[in-house]
Amino acid sequence: MALRRIRLEGDPILRKKSRPIDEINDRIQVLLDDMVETMRDAEGVGLAAPQVGVLRRAVVIDVGEGPIKIINPEIIDEEGTKIDIEGCLSVPNKAGKVERPERVKIKYINEDGEEVILEGEGLLAKAICHEIDHLDGILYTDKVIEYVDLTAEEDEETLEEEEES
Image (cartoon, rainbow, N blue to C red; front, side):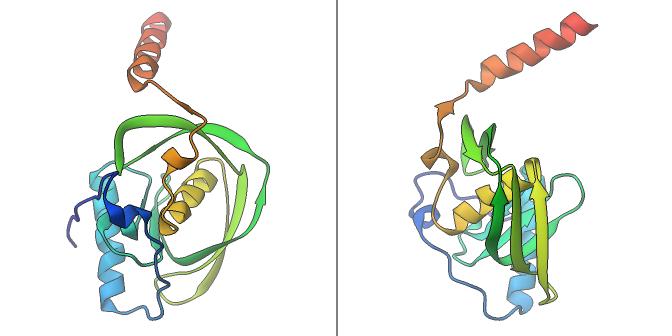
């Protein structure tokens, strides 16, 4: 496994549509493993292949329950809406409020070539939608309702913690 360079906003590859994966071979397995390692190193919850310079429909997500390796994801159902703060490894030091489905159901192929149906809500639903957007050349900044000042958020959290102690 190896760390890959995360492409940053302004890199044209982030605006291109990714191609489906037709065969799960050693190169795809290595890509998925490298993406998990890169995501963890960057302390992210998700990473899409275009973010490491590969225009293929592959995503990795880990919301604290272990990594999920997703190939050729397709949203088959979504419910509700929720506005929440998002950030992105490709857009460092920025955050904004984005409207996403509260629940989402996707169909995808896992690393063993099996079709899987996954239902997610909350953070998992947000991460799934965010990463699938990357596969279509869409950044969360395209959907931001309002940007959030990260330093103000951190100051509020520190103040709340100090008041509690």
